[in-house]
Image 1 (cartoon, helix red, strand yellow):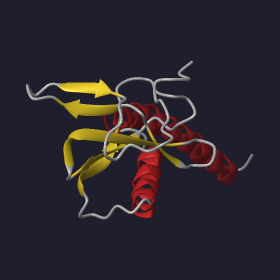
Image 2 (cartoon, helix red, strand yellow):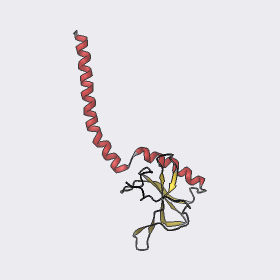
Image 3 (cartoon, rainbow, N blue to C red):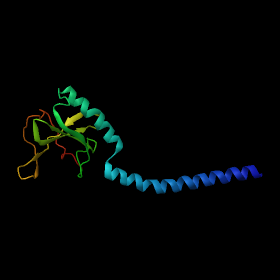
Image 4 (cartoon, helix red, strand yellow):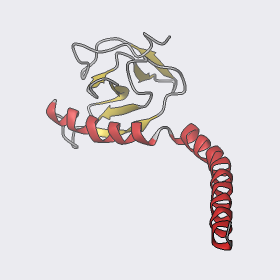
Length: 145
């Protein structure tokens, strides 16, 4: 073996060692990022698809008080991506609606569960009919095996 071949082998070995060290160091940072902020891909598709869905339903920015991606702290329906998109409408500020994205076709569905702010400041989860309830909602707490 000549000197050039040895140098190339050494460079390859050092590159492989550096790559392994980088992966070992980067993995925990990525893991904690996803734990704290949610999956970036899920966040992207929710922020892309749900506002368009709401526009098609006839809602404008004037109708919505607050809307953003949220990451639930519990396991949800396995047919949906884990992240939710929460919406509070201006004409019903005490109710928070949640929307999810299906894994198969990436369609938006409203979840039946809503958060209602009670007069004492406590939030209660309920599934009743409200102003902005859709006819066919999906239970986010079903199909969680």
